Image (cartoon, rainbow, N blue to C red; front, side, top):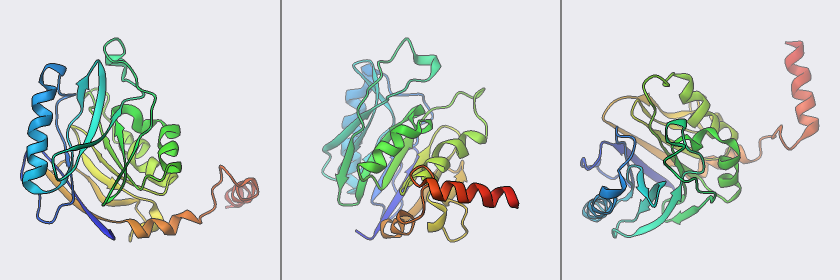
Amino acid sequence: MSKTTVCVTIPFKKPKPNSDLVVFNDIRPFIPEWDSVAYIKGCSRYAMQYKVYLVPARVVIDNTLYLCLIDPNGEILGVQGASHVSLAYHEKFIPDNRVNIISTQIGKIFLCVDVDIYQPAILRNAALQGANIVVSSQYVDSYQFTRELISTGIWNSAQQNPFYVVGCCNFFKAVAAPMATTQDSSGYIAQPSNESTLVANLYLHKLQKDINLPNPLQNKAFALEFAKTMLTE
């Protein structure tokens, strides 16, 4: 599929026309365990009604924080647990240590749970497994939120890896991409916004532009030359 249209919106709101992938942006930290089964059932009905792939909000199952991907038939295609847990929930949640890539007709998707978006090793693992769309869903306490959290999270991840990052939390939603694939070289397909709904078109074939760029982490000669250039400017 050459184009994937993603819609990030408040839970259970009708998606924009022609949406392929919907991401629920819930302002709550998570769906509690006692409500998770009923919530996922409602999400399955939504995916079937609108014939979309759906990433619901974060849910708690067996004391682990999860994201899941539901297909247009209402079936759960895959799940991903949080490998890292924010300080507020260290005593509450059990970390997961797997990195699961979910293959779909709209791309290879990695679900990045909460603060895992700040862990470069996890995102690089996903990239090496072939992920081309990352969905990052998190909750940020108001006293912790700064604009730098955006650039050190979804934006950095997209610059370090050849994939799109669809990000949302209780403060913003945005879609980041490698700078070489964005027309204004900003590294954003959709700039950070707090509007109720965000829509963006992802062209997966454009990610090929970044694959052959020199990688300073793997090419010592390039890294030394780059550093020399920077020092003379």
